[in-house]
Length: 339
Image 1 (tube, helix red, strand yellow):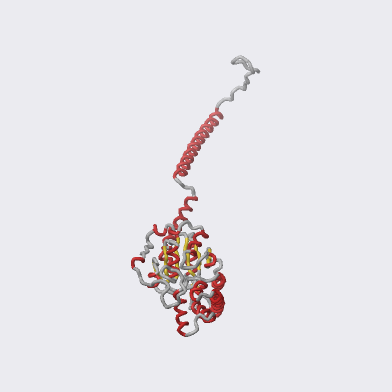
Image 2: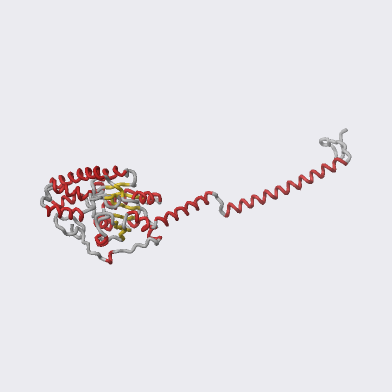
């Protein structure tokens, strides 16, 4: 691959992406800056080497494939094939095989062998999640952040990994290169993730991976933050040289980098305020309630006075002579009565 990130057919030991560290390209990430986290909407995570422990399965399957397809026969060719496999980690495997041969049939045969070999190795040796990867995903989702799992594998191989871990329904979306257009180092996977999840801006997108190709893809997509992890194929020097904004030991450390503890506390405070709002005890309500209570007290006092007056009148009536009954006739002059 050229320094611009395009795959070439040259099969040599040169790094696929220039690994010289450019200090100016390393952007400091301040997790305490609330403005830097305010727009967090989407986190795009790689699979093998980032959220899934690789255990060398990809490289083993790759060597089997180039050997079966006749792309590496001698010991030296196989050694160089291993180097090439590591350098191109994260890229679509069919594209890598095409870079090794001009024969499309040979490339497709190698890719088929790779998928079969990977599935066999995964069944024999098992597939494990990187510790903390699942918990991170659920924490992000609880904060309303979408999580998308991407890969350089075909959909069939990706499903093998997801099924082995029980992750079919873990992420909001899973994507393989064939579903996005082009694989890494192109920006198609992160941008497709953004469009499919409905995120509003690349500024609110974080891309995380263990390879230089992951970093190149995130940068090409304009992601607000591009992070490398040290649980996979490439080391810190390579990831920083590719332009990563930050490099962390593991995807589990992304929680601290993004300040998830602070975001969760803020979410809890919001919930508490919402609970208070539901009580409807605002100032206007309190004033109205106090006014109602005052009116009720006044009415009660009036009723008490009237009751006391009535009682006094009744008591006086017990000692007074009974008045004569008289009914004034209709139309009768004043003072006239009917007897």
